[in-house]
Image 1: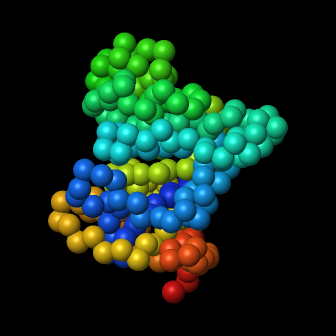
Image 2: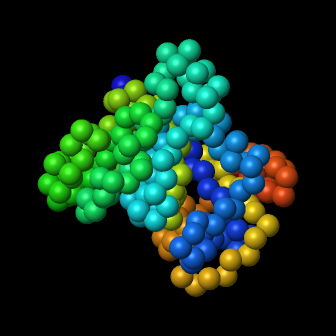
Length: 225
């Protein structure tokens, strides 16, 4: 029997729940110590997933920065970098994005329509997998499980976090809360409107990292309250 990967959502938010502001430059919510913690979480993951909108907006490389952590992965018989995964229903992905040109293997989950666009566009850059007429996150996790992915980190953005939580497919949420207020109506928030499970999540841990509070929730476990 194939097991789906353990799904860990990772996000940094302002006190008022935003993951960025409305300016062209990316808002850095975490501090250096928290960025290093996120790098460690990446290094412990078999795959890192990011949504297409975040890919287009932030143009990240999505790498493990620490040479020591990459060396430890290799010593453990793992690839130097986790598998990098993105999701795009329409297939609107630019092959010039930095995501494709750094790190290890890349995988795109899309629809039949998106696959028709991306087959040639990403040839030699990424494997393109169609999930059919729609994006089904359960089918996505099943496929990753068959590929041997045991632990996946989801780094955003709003739509991906919303869909994993509303589908009750997240095993863990690590939320770094920064002492910043954004308040821009056009800025992206952590979550969008959706029907979420009504139970209270269990708070497993709270850690102070400089001026950032790291909250660790287990969404599929109730606090009993």
